[in-house]
Amino acid sequence: MDRPIRGGQRGDRQPWWREDGLAGVASGLASIPLVLDLSPTEGDEGILCALFFGSGPALARYGGDPSSDEATRALTLEALETYFEPKARAPKEFYVRNWEDDPWSRGCGSQVPTCTLSSVGATLRRPIGRIVFAGAETGTTDFMEGAVTSGQRAARRRTRAARRP
Image 1 (tube, helix red, strand yellow):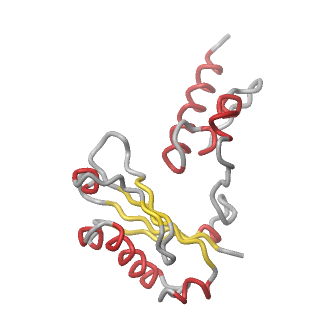
Image 2 (cartoon, rainbow, N blue to C red):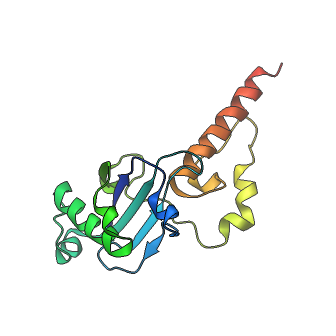
Image 3 (cartoon, one colour):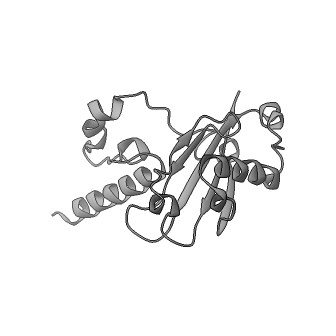
């Protein structure tokens, strides 16, 4: 089974890729098949998330060592430079997260099929009695920002409901 590994970098200023006219989204390399801009829509912090889905042997084919965060970092930064430019090799911070080791994600992020959120997203966000749903799938954006904003929305709803007589 493929194991999802996420390498993320955090910049010390607004997303430079936006300043350079780039979207911050890239795909196509076998080593790091997907990069997403997870920067806040407002603020001065640039965050790129690089995703690799593969088993230990697959990661090793591209020069990575699945047991080494440093090897994963090197592989990820090389891919980011290929996708964007040399600036991508010098992040302020860098994180490696193996979702397989995360007890909350249970190995992977959500795999909601295309068009699901546009067709039933409002229904997923609607409370049922005292139950309020939150998560990336119930947000208005996807991935981490969607999870955070939907969690905030759910907390506001529960707080308002608790204040009612």
